[in-house]
Amino acid sequence: MRAQGDRLRVVAENIANAQSTSATPGGEPYRRKTVLFQNVLDKEMGVNTVKVTKRSFDQSPFEKKYDPNHPAADPEGYVLYPNVNAIVEMMDMREARRGYEANLNVVEVSKSMLSQTIGLLK
Image 1 (cartoon, rainbow, N blue to C red):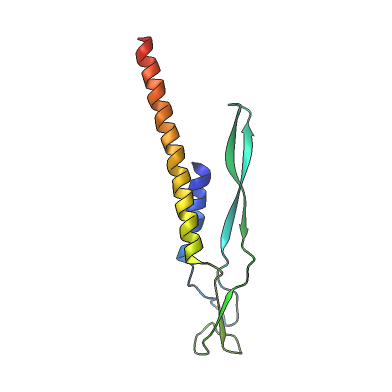
Image 2 (image 1 turned 90 degrees about the vertical axis):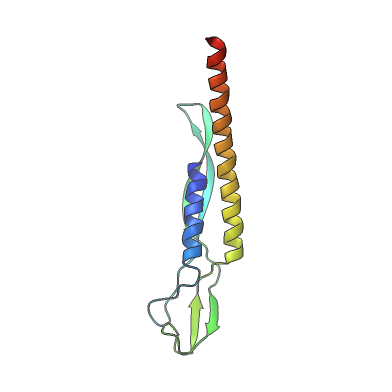
């Protein structure tokens, strides 16, 4: 659940900065962030867990638009926009939300089973 929550935060940050430009003329805008998951053995509990092992930046090219009147335009009149695709981010958000909800359902079912087991032992 924690890993999917981190992923949701990164997706939200990407969406929030999807139309931001550089503060200086010809500078680079916001670069899309990504997270990398890895199975990690929790030795104390003896189970595999999923952790965010790396946060990195998407190295795909920025979108370039001609707008010579924009304050962030380079000397040729082009403005760089973030390499964030709103459709991809929405799909990532949907996938992360579903993963989070699935994990939450597992926790709820486990609680219910434990409660019923305790009820049988009384």
